Image (cartoon, rainbow, N blue to C red; front, side, top):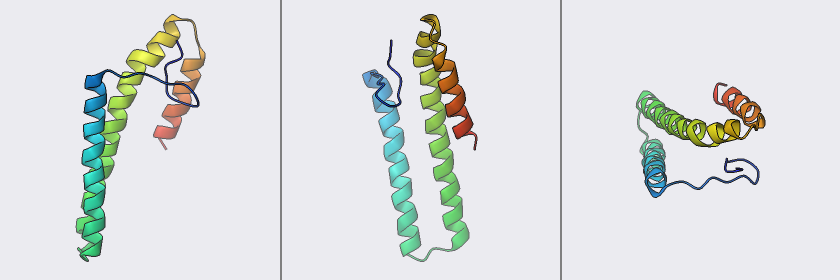
Amino acid sequence: MDNCCHCQKKRERSEEEMKKLCNRLCRIEGQVRGLREMLQRDVYCTDILIQVSAVNAALNSFSKELLSEHLRTCVADGIRQGDDGVIEELVGVLQKLMK
């Protein structure tokens, strides 16, 4: 089952999962727009940096949620089907996430 997410691989998500992930991204987009507005209003540097930290935390939370679903679905399915490539793919993704 080739339903993961790189190159030409795809993974269909439930409506609930899609809604949850999209809502998180919409909130993050709003936070990033807020950063730009803070900058344009000449807000003090440390206040902007604190908001940047909040955006980073939100992106990390999104990544954790997506990774968790990836492990439960794509990786688990690949292992069950004897596809050891999913392990190498996961190791590569984790190395990139941990930079």
